[in-house]
Image (tube, rainbow, N blue to C red; front, side, top):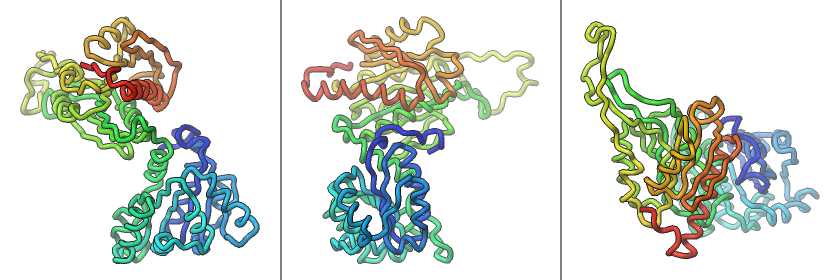
Amino acid sequence: MGARTLAPRPPWKGRRIVVGVSGGIAAYKSVQLARDLTRLGAEVDVLMTRSATEFVGPISFEGVTGRPALTSLWSAQGVARHVGVARDADLLIVAPATADLLARAAGGRADDLLTTVLITVRCPVLMAPAMNHRMWTHPQTTLNASHCREALGYELLGPTTGPLAVGEGEGEGRMVEVEEIVERAGVLLGQDENWAGRRVVITSGPTREPLDPVRFLGNRSSGRMGFALAREAALLGARVTVVSGPTALPDPSGVEVRRVETAREMLAATEALIPEADVAIYAAAVADYRPGQTRERKTRKEETGHRMAVELTENPDIARETRSLRPQSCVAVGFALETEELRERASRKLESKGFHLIVANPAGEHDAGFESDTNRVTLLDRDGGEESLPLMTKAEVAREVLARVTAWLSARDASPTQGRDAS
Protein backbone atom coordinates (compact mmCIF):
# COMPACT_ATOMS: atom_id res chain seq x y z
CA MET A 1 0.00 0.00 0.00
CA GLY A 2 1.72 3.17 -1.17
CA ALA A 3 1.89 6.29 0.94
CA ARG A 4 -0.39 8.16 -1.46
CA THR A 5 -3.27 5.81 -0.65
CA LEU A 6 -3.01 6.33 3.10
CA ALA A 7 -5.57 9.07 3.47
CA PRO A 8 -8.81 8.89 5.46
CA ARG A 9 -11.30 6.81 3.51
CA PRO A 10 -13.99 4.16 3.99
CA PRO A 11 -14.23 1.62 5.46
CA TRP A 12 -11.56 2.63 8.00
CA LYS A 13 -12.50 6.29 8.33
CA GLY A 14 -14.31 7.11 11.55
CA ARG A 15 -14.13 3.56 12.90
CA ARG A 16 -12.77 2.62 16.32
CA ILE A 17 -10.08 -0.06 16.17
CA VAL A 18 -8.27 -1.63 19.09
CA VAL A 19 -4.79 -2.97 18.36
CA GLY A 20 -3.58 -5.48 20.92
CA VAL A 21 0.17 -6.08 21.01
CA SER A 22 1.66 -9.10 22.76
CA GLY A 23 5.32 -9.83 23.43
CA GLY A 24 7.04 -11.04 20.30
CA ILE A 25 9.76 -9.70 18.05
CA ALA A 26 7.11 -8.83 15.45
CA ALA A 27 5.76 -6.18 17.84
CA TYR A 28 7.81 -3.57 16.00
CA LYS A 29 5.60 -4.09 12.95
CA SER A 30 2.56 -3.16 14.99
CA VAL A 31 3.77 0.42 15.18
CA GLN A 32 3.39 0.59 11.40
CA LEU A 33 0.01 -1.12 11.67
CA ALA A 34 -1.26 1.48 14.17
CA ARG A 35 0.15 4.27 12.01
CA ASP A 36 -1.47 3.03 8.80
CA LEU A 37 -4.85 2.53 10.42
CA THR A 38 -4.68 6.03 11.90
CA ARG A 39 -3.73 7.57 8.55
CA LEU A 40 -6.72 5.81 6.99
CA GLY A 41 -8.94 7.71 9.42
CA ALA A 42 -9.50 5.19 12.21
CA GLU A 43 -9.41 6.05 15.89
CA VAL A 44 -6.86 3.57 17.24
CA ASP A 45 -6.41 2.45 20.83
CA VAL A 46 -3.33 0.35 21.50
CA LEU A 47 -3.28 -2.18 24.34
CA MET A 48 0.08 -3.71 25.24
CA THR A 49 0.91 -6.71 27.37
CA ARG A 50 3.75 -6.30 29.84
CA SER A 51 6.04 -8.42 27.70
CA ALA A 52 5.21 -6.34 24.62
CA THR A 53 6.79 -3.32 26.31
CA GLU A 54 10.07 -5.22 26.37
CA PHE A 55 10.14 -5.12 22.58
CA VAL A 56 8.73 -1.66 21.79
CA GLY A 57 7.91 1.37 23.93
CA PRO A 58 4.39 2.72 24.47
CA ILE A 59 5.55 6.17 23.38
CA SER A 60 6.09 4.84 19.85
CA PHE A 61 2.40 4.03 19.54
CA GLU A 62 1.34 7.35 21.02
CA GLY A 63 3.54 9.08 18.46
CA VAL A 64 1.72 7.47 15.51
CA THR A 65 -1.84 7.42 16.87
CA GLY A 66 -1.97 10.57 18.97
CA ARG A 67 -3.43 8.49 21.80
CA PRO A 68 -1.62 7.00 24.81
CA ALA A 69 -1.02 3.28 24.67
CA LEU A 70 -2.57 1.39 27.57
CA THR A 71 -0.32 -1.09 29.31
CA SER A 72 -1.86 -2.04 32.65
CA LEU A 73 -5.26 -3.13 33.85
CA TRP A 74 -4.34 -1.90 37.31
CA SER A 75 -3.57 1.71 36.48
CA ALA A 76 -6.31 4.29 36.99
CA GLN A 77 -6.31 4.92 33.25
CA GLY A 78 -6.61 1.23 32.46
CA VAL A 79 -9.49 0.66 34.85
CA ALA A 80 -11.32 3.70 33.51
CA ARG A 81 -10.90 2.92 29.85
CA HIS A 82 -10.92 -0.83 29.30
CA VAL A 83 -14.71 -1.19 29.53
CA GLY A 84 -15.29 1.77 27.24
CA VAL A 85 -12.68 0.56 24.77
CA ALA A 86 -14.31 -2.86 24.60
CA ARG A 87 -17.81 -1.41 24.32
CA ASP A 88 -17.02 1.06 21.53
CA ALA A 89 -14.65 -1.02 19.40
CA ASP A 90 -15.64 -1.82 15.82
CA LEU A 91 -12.73 -4.22 15.46
CA LEU A 92 -10.04 -5.74 17.67
CA ILE A 93 -6.76 -6.72 16.03
CA VAL A 94 -4.15 -8.71 17.98
CA ALA A 95 -0.79 -8.41 16.25
CA PRO A 96 1.38 -10.16 17.01
CA ALA A 97 -0.59 -12.92 18.69
CA THR A 98 2.04 -15.03 20.45
CA ALA A 99 1.71 -18.64 21.55
CA ASP A 100 1.10 -17.43 25.09
CA LEU A 101 -1.57 -14.98 24.00
CA LEU A 102 -3.35 -17.66 21.98
CA ALA A 103 -3.27 -20.00 24.97
CA ARG A 104 -4.69 -17.39 27.32
CA ALA A 105 -7.35 -16.34 24.79
CA ALA A 106 -8.41 -19.93 24.18
CA GLY A 107 -8.67 -20.52 27.92
CA GLY A 108 -10.80 -17.43 28.49
CA ARG A 109 -8.20 -15.82 30.76
CA ALA A 110 -8.59 -12.19 31.76
CA ASP A 111 -5.37 -11.63 33.67
CA ASP A 112 -4.18 -8.45 31.97
CA LEU A 113 -5.62 -5.50 30.07
CA LEU A 114 -5.52 -7.09 26.62
CA THR A 115 -7.14 -10.39 27.58
CA THR A 116 -9.74 -8.57 29.68
CA VAL A 117 -10.75 -6.47 26.68
CA LEU A 118 -10.58 -9.54 24.44
CA ILE A 119 -13.11 -11.40 26.56
CA THR A 120 -15.34 -8.32 26.80
CA VAL A 121 -15.62 -7.15 23.19
CA ARG A 122 -18.48 -8.17 20.94
CA CYS A 123 -16.95 -6.88 17.72
CA PRO A 124 -15.01 -8.99 15.19
CA VAL A 125 -11.57 -10.13 16.37
CA LEU A 126 -8.65 -10.50 13.95
CA MET A 127 -5.49 -12.23 15.16
CA ALA A 128 -2.11 -12.31 13.40
CA PRO A 129 -0.11 -15.14 15.01
CA ALA A 130 3.68 -14.81 15.16
CA MET A 131 6.11 -17.15 16.88
CA ASN A 132 8.90 -19.66 16.38
CA HIS A 133 7.82 -22.37 13.94
CA ARG A 134 8.27 -25.03 16.61
CA MET A 135 5.83 -23.18 18.84
CA TRP A 136 3.34 -22.78 15.99
CA THR A 137 3.40 -26.49 15.13
CA HIS A 138 3.17 -27.67 18.74
CA PRO A 139 -0.05 -29.72 19.25
CA GLN A 140 -1.26 -27.45 22.06
CA THR A 141 -0.85 -24.32 19.95
CA THR A 142 -2.72 -26.06 17.15
CA LEU A 143 -5.59 -26.80 19.55
CA ASN A 144 -5.56 -23.26 20.92
CA ALA A 145 -5.63 -21.72 17.44
CA SER A 146 -8.44 -24.06 16.40
CA HIS A 147 -10.46 -23.18 19.50
CA CYS A 148 -10.01 -19.45 18.91
CA ARG A 149 -11.10 -19.86 15.32
CA GLU A 150 -13.92 -22.36 15.59
CA ALA A 151 -15.37 -21.94 19.08
CA LEU A 152 -14.74 -18.24 19.68
CA GLY A 153 -15.21 -17.03 16.11
CA TYR A 154 -11.90 -15.16 15.90
CA GLU A 155 -10.29 -14.83 12.50
CA LEU A 156 -6.65 -15.90 12.31
CA LEU A 157 -4.60 -14.36 9.53
CA GLY A 158 -1.39 -16.28 8.96
CA PRO A 159 1.19 -17.02 10.05
CA THR A 160 3.22 -17.21 6.87
CA THR A 161 6.49 -18.89 6.01
CA GLY A 162 9.65 -16.80 5.93
CA PRO A 163 12.65 -15.60 7.91
CA LEU A 164 12.11 -15.71 11.67
CA ALA A 165 14.12 -14.05 14.42
CA VAL A 166 17.90 -14.14 14.15
CA GLY A 167 19.19 -17.66 14.76
CA GLU A 168 15.82 -19.30 14.10
CA GLY A 169 16.15 -19.66 10.34
CA GLU A 170 13.04 -19.84 8.21
CA GLY A 171 9.74 -21.55 8.79
CA GLU A 172 6.03 -21.13 9.32
CA GLY A 173 5.44 -18.68 12.11
CA ARG A 174 6.23 -15.28 10.61
CA MET A 175 3.56 -12.62 11.06
CA VAL A 176 1.85 -11.60 7.83
CA GLU A 177 2.77 -8.20 6.46
CA VAL A 178 1.09 -5.08 7.80
CA GLU A 179 -0.56 -4.30 4.47
CA GLU A 180 -2.37 -7.64 4.51
CA ILE A 181 -3.64 -7.01 8.05
CA VAL A 182 -4.86 -3.54 7.09
CA GLU A 183 -6.66 -4.89 4.02
CA ARG A 184 -8.32 -7.70 5.96
CA ALA A 185 -9.36 -5.22 8.63
CA GLY A 186 -10.97 -3.20 5.86
CA VAL A 187 -12.96 -6.24 4.74
CA LEU A 188 -14.20 -6.92 8.28
CA LEU A 189 -15.17 -3.26 8.71
CA GLY A 190 -16.66 -2.76 5.26
CA GLN A 191 -18.65 -5.90 4.54
CA ASP A 192 -21.93 -5.12 2.85
CA GLU A 193 -24.67 -7.72 2.98
CA ASN A 194 -25.42 -7.04 -0.68
CA TRP A 195 -21.90 -8.16 -1.58
CA ALA A 196 -20.97 -10.82 0.98
CA GLY A 197 -20.02 -13.98 -0.88
CA ARG A 198 -20.91 -12.60 -4.32
CA ARG A 199 -18.80 -13.85 -7.20
CA VAL A 200 -17.30 -10.94 -9.10
CA VAL A 201 -15.39 -11.32 -12.37
CA ILE A 202 -13.36 -8.36 -13.63
CA THR A 203 -11.31 -8.08 -16.80
CA SER A 204 -8.44 -5.64 -16.49
CA GLY A 205 -5.34 -4.25 -18.12
CA PRO A 206 -4.16 -4.40 -21.73
CA THR A 207 -3.69 -7.35 -24.02
CA ARG A 208 -0.57 -8.04 -26.06
CA GLU A 209 -0.80 -9.52 -29.52
CA PRO A 210 2.57 -10.91 -30.67
CA LEU A 211 4.07 -9.96 -34.00
CA ASP A 212 7.04 -12.19 -33.32
CA PRO A 213 8.85 -13.51 -30.21
CA VAL A 214 10.06 -9.96 -29.43
CA ARG A 215 7.41 -7.45 -30.59
CA PHE A 216 3.72 -7.12 -29.92
CA LEU A 217 0.72 -4.87 -30.55
CA GLY A 218 -0.70 -3.40 -27.36
CA ASN A 219 -1.93 -0.23 -25.69
CA ARG A 220 -1.18 2.07 -22.77
CA SER A 221 -3.58 0.55 -20.24
CA SER A 222 -1.95 0.09 -16.83
CA GLY A 223 -4.72 -1.99 -15.24
CA ARG A 224 -5.15 0.49 -12.38
CA MET A 225 -8.88 0.92 -12.87
CA GLY A 226 -9.64 -2.79 -12.95
CA PHE A 227 -7.45 -3.47 -9.93
CA ALA A 228 -9.08 -0.59 -8.02
CA LEU A 229 -12.49 -2.13 -8.73
CA ALA A 230 -11.23 -5.52 -7.57
CA ARG A 231 -9.86 -4.15 -4.32
CA GLU A 232 -13.03 -2.20 -3.51
CA ALA A 233 -15.26 -5.19 -4.28
CA ALA A 234 -13.12 -7.39 -2.02
CA LEU A 235 -13.45 -4.83 0.78
CA LEU A 236 -17.22 -5.15 0.46
CA GLY A 237 -16.95 -8.89 1.05
CA ALA A 238 -17.14 -10.21 -2.52
CA ARG A 239 -15.17 -13.13 -3.91
CA VAL A 240 -13.28 -11.46 -6.71
CA THR A 241 -11.40 -12.90 -9.65
CA VAL A 242 -9.51 -10.62 -12.03
CA VAL A 243 -8.55 -11.75 -15.51
CA SER A 244 -5.62 -9.44 -16.12
CA GLY A 245 -3.51 -8.68 -19.11
CA PRO A 246 0.17 -7.77 -18.60
CA THR A 247 0.60 -5.19 -15.85
CA ALA A 248 3.27 -4.26 -13.34
CA LEU A 249 0.73 -3.89 -10.55
CA PRO A 250 0.85 -6.26 -7.56
CA ASP A 251 -2.16 -8.48 -6.96
CA PRO A 252 -4.77 -6.76 -4.77
CA SER A 253 -5.05 -8.35 -1.33
CA GLY A 254 -7.77 -10.97 -1.08
CA VAL A 255 -8.28 -11.12 -4.86
CA GLU A 256 -7.57 -14.01 -7.21
CA VAL A 257 -5.70 -12.81 -10.30
CA ARG A 258 -5.43 -14.89 -13.45
CA ARG A 259 -2.74 -13.51 -15.74
CA VAL A 260 -3.14 -13.71 -19.52
CA GLU A 261 -1.43 -12.13 -22.54
CA THR A 262 -3.69 -12.07 -25.57
CA ALA A 263 -7.34 -11.25 -26.21
CA ARG A 264 -8.10 -14.87 -27.01
CA GLU A 265 -6.51 -16.01 -23.75
CA MET A 266 -8.55 -13.39 -21.89
CA LEU A 267 -11.71 -14.59 -23.60
CA ALA A 268 -11.07 -18.21 -22.67
CA ALA A 269 -10.39 -17.35 -19.03
CA THR A 270 -13.46 -15.12 -18.84
CA GLU A 271 -15.71 -17.71 -20.47
CA ALA A 272 -14.74 -20.19 -17.76
CA LEU A 273 -15.68 -17.76 -14.97
CA ILE A 274 -18.71 -15.84 -16.24
CA PRO A 275 -21.35 -18.59 -15.82
CA GLU A 276 -20.93 -18.36 -12.02
CA ALA A 277 -20.70 -14.56 -11.81
CA ASP A 278 -23.07 -12.38 -9.83
CA VAL A 279 -21.30 -9.29 -11.17
CA ALA A 280 -19.24 -8.99 -14.36
CA ILE A 281 -17.11 -5.88 -14.95
CA TYR A 282 -15.39 -5.49 -18.30
CA ALA A 283 -12.62 -2.99 -17.57
CA ALA A 284 -9.85 -4.39 -19.79
CA ALA A 285 -8.50 -2.50 -22.78
CA VAL A 286 -8.62 -5.37 -25.22
CA ALA A 287 -6.76 -4.97 -28.51
CA ASP A 288 -9.31 -4.79 -31.32
CA TYR A 289 -6.96 -6.49 -33.76
CA ARG A 290 -4.10 -8.98 -33.78
CA PRO A 291 -1.54 -9.86 -36.42
CA GLY A 292 -2.97 -12.38 -38.84
CA GLN A 293 0.26 -14.34 -38.58
CA THR A 294 2.82 -14.46 -35.77
CA ARG A 295 6.37 -14.93 -36.99
CA GLU A 296 8.32 -17.71 -35.31
CA ARG A 297 11.54 -15.70 -35.14
CA LYS A 298 12.46 -12.06 -34.72
CA THR A 299 11.69 -9.89 -37.73
CA ARG A 300 14.83 -8.14 -39.01
CA LYS A 301 15.06 -4.88 -40.92
CA GLU A 302 17.35 -6.34 -43.54
CA GLU A 303 14.57 -8.78 -44.37
CA THR A 304 11.69 -6.30 -44.52
CA GLY A 305 13.38 -3.20 -45.90
CA HIS A 306 12.18 0.31 -45.09
CA ARG A 307 8.54 -0.76 -44.69
CA MET A 308 6.79 -3.72 -43.19
CA ALA A 309 3.17 -4.54 -43.90
CA VAL A 310 1.23 -6.43 -41.24
CA GLU A 311 -2.16 -7.91 -41.98
CA LEU A 312 -4.46 -7.60 -38.95
CA THR A 313 -7.33 -9.85 -37.93
CA GLU A 314 -10.21 -8.78 -35.70
CA ASN A 315 -10.02 -9.95 -32.09
CA PRO A 316 -13.05 -11.29 -30.23
CA ASP A 317 -15.18 -8.76 -28.34
CA ILE A 318 -15.06 -10.29 -24.87
CA ALA A 319 -18.16 -8.58 -23.48
CA ARG A 320 -20.23 -9.51 -26.53
CA GLU A 321 -18.86 -13.06 -26.77
CA THR A 322 -19.62 -13.82 -23.11
CA ARG A 323 -23.01 -12.09 -22.97
CA SER A 324 -24.95 -15.30 -23.50
CA LEU A 325 -22.91 -17.03 -20.78
CA ARG A 326 -23.81 -14.51 -18.09
CA PRO A 327 -26.53 -15.71 -15.68
CA GLN A 328 -29.81 -13.82 -16.04
CA SER A 329 -29.27 -12.37 -12.57
CA CYS A 330 -25.71 -11.16 -13.33
CA VAL A 331 -25.15 -7.40 -13.15
CA ALA A 332 -22.86 -6.34 -16.00
CA VAL A 333 -20.71 -3.20 -16.17
CA GLY A 334 -18.73 -2.02 -19.16
CA PHE A 335 -16.19 0.68 -19.93
CA ALA A 336 -15.93 2.95 -22.96
CA LEU A 337 -12.77 4.93 -23.68
CA GLU A 338 -13.38 7.25 -26.60
CA THR A 339 -11.66 10.16 -28.34
CA GLU A 340 -14.92 11.56 -29.74
CA GLU A 341 -18.71 11.19 -29.44
CA LEU A 342 -18.23 9.83 -25.92
CA ARG A 343 -21.85 9.61 -24.80
CA GLU A 344 -23.20 8.44 -28.14
CA ARG A 345 -20.68 5.64 -28.52
CA ALA A 346 -20.99 4.62 -24.87
CA SER A 347 -24.78 4.47 -25.18
CA ARG A 348 -24.52 2.17 -28.17
CA LYS A 349 -22.17 -0.15 -26.29
CA LEU A 350 -24.47 -0.11 -23.26
CA GLU A 351 -27.31 -1.48 -25.35
CA SER A 352 -25.47 -3.76 -27.74
CA LYS A 353 -23.52 -5.57 -25.02
CA GLY A 354 -26.33 -5.89 -22.48
CA PHE A 355 -24.74 -3.79 -19.74
CA HIS A 356 -26.62 -2.44 -16.74
CA LEU A 357 -24.09 0.38 -16.45
CA ILE A 358 -21.30 1.73 -18.62
CA VAL A 359 -18.43 3.93 -17.49
CA ALA A 360 -17.46 6.38 -20.21
CA ASN A 361 -14.20 8.28 -20.05
CA PRO A 362 -12.39 10.44 -22.63
CA ALA A 363 -9.05 9.38 -24.05
CA GLY A 364 -6.09 11.70 -24.27
CA GLU A 365 -6.55 13.74 -21.08
CA HIS A 366 -3.33 13.94 -19.07
CA ASP A 367 -5.03 13.43 -15.69
CA ALA A 368 -7.52 10.72 -16.69
CA GLY A 369 -7.66 7.41 -18.50
CA PHE A 370 -4.58 5.32 -19.23
CA GLU A 371 -1.45 5.49 -17.06
CA SER A 372 -3.04 7.87 -14.54
CA ASP A 373 -4.04 7.51 -10.89
CA THR A 374 -7.14 9.64 -11.52
CA ASN A 375 -10.10 9.46 -13.86
CA ARG A 376 -12.97 11.63 -15.05
CA VAL A 377 -16.00 9.57 -16.04
CA THR A 378 -19.64 9.71 -16.99
CA LEU A 379 -21.93 6.93 -15.81
CA LEU A 380 -24.76 5.83 -18.10
CA ASP A 381 -27.28 3.17 -17.05
CA ARG A 382 -29.83 1.08 -18.89
CA ASP A 383 -32.72 3.05 -17.37
CA GLY A 384 -31.56 6.25 -19.04
CA GLY A 385 -29.72 7.68 -16.07
CA GLU A 386 -26.61 9.76 -16.69
CA GLU A 387 -24.18 11.31 -14.21
CA SER A 388 -20.86 13.01 -14.86
CA LEU A 389 -18.41 12.69 -11.99
CA PRO A 390 -15.63 15.18 -11.21
CA LEU A 391 -11.97 14.23 -11.39
CA MET A 392 -11.42 11.46 -8.83
CA THR A 393 -8.86 8.89 -7.91
CA LYS A 394 -9.52 5.55 -9.53
CA ALA A 395 -10.31 4.11 -6.09
CA GLU A 396 -13.01 6.76 -5.67
CA VAL A 397 -14.37 6.04 -9.14
CA ALA A 398 -14.46 2.35 -8.26
CA ARG A 399 -16.49 3.06 -5.13
CA GLU A 400 -18.96 5.16 -7.13
CA VAL A 401 -19.36 2.41 -9.72
CA LEU A 402 -19.87 -0.29 -7.09
CA ALA A 403 -22.40 1.87 -5.26
CA ARG A 404 -24.54 1.78 -8.41
CA VAL A 405 -24.07 -1.97 -8.67
CA THR A 406 -25.13 -2.32 -5.04
CA ALA A 407 -28.45 -0.72 -5.94
CA TRP A 408 -28.96 -3.27 -8.72
CA LEU A 409 -28.09 -6.17 -6.41
CA SER A 410 -30.39 -4.89 -3.69
CA ALA A 411 -33.27 -4.42 -6.10
CA ARG A 412 -32.72 -7.86 -7.58
CA ASP A 413 -32.77 -9.53 -4.17
CA ALA A 414 -35.81 -7.56 -3.04
CA SER A 415 -37.78 -8.50 -6.15
CA PRO A 416 -36.50 -11.48 -8.17
CA THR A 417 -38.28 -10.15 -11.28
CA GLN A 418 -36.30 -6.88 -11.25
CA GLY A 419 -32.91 -6.41 -12.83
CA ARG A 420 -32.64 -10.03 -13.97
CA ASP A 421 -32.52 -9.77 -17.75
CA ALA A 422 -28.87 -9.16 -18.49
CA SER A 423 -28.87 -11.22 -21.65
